[in-house]
Image 1: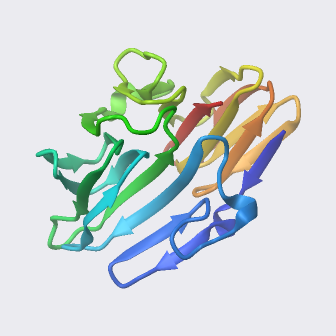
Image 2: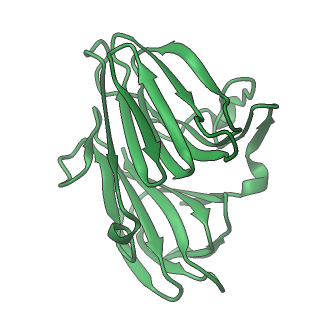
Length: 239
């Protein structure tokens, strides 16, 4: 089964300091029919204004993955970690028994766009951890690059659950094939460009901000269809 959730169907939160699009229930958006997709609890597309941010606040028993699409995002936490995450960086924060962190935009003139993903960990009460890695654009061209995984994917940041997150930049008319495993879920989110998703259920066309939620076994073909530029997307494989 493939369900396409369009960009317009997301919940928009527009504050003076941050613009967010919520794919699932989050903050002031409460929809019991759209609370999660398997272990995936949140998928937010944020644009943070210059010199603004989410100041220090706590989390526990969550796996929080951040992908910086453009600009620079400054991270600090009470474990002593601090980093200026440039576009192309992925951050994994396992909140475990508790962590306090802040995410801010250090630029005086440029916005920062970043995706934030919340996953439910396999086990609660683990020690909190943090890690980050920069993935150059060329590593994602016409391939599925694992950037965070709990299944030991080479070169990926470590997750605390049976999930793998991939990033890809697909050129026009180039195709990738993704054989979905029985009893797994697949979440595809189009960051930019245009993407065609096809399988035995039909052909689906995604525009920026659209997502496809896929259940049951379905051999997927992903094709870049942008008239100009490339299609950048994120794919999450989860139980």
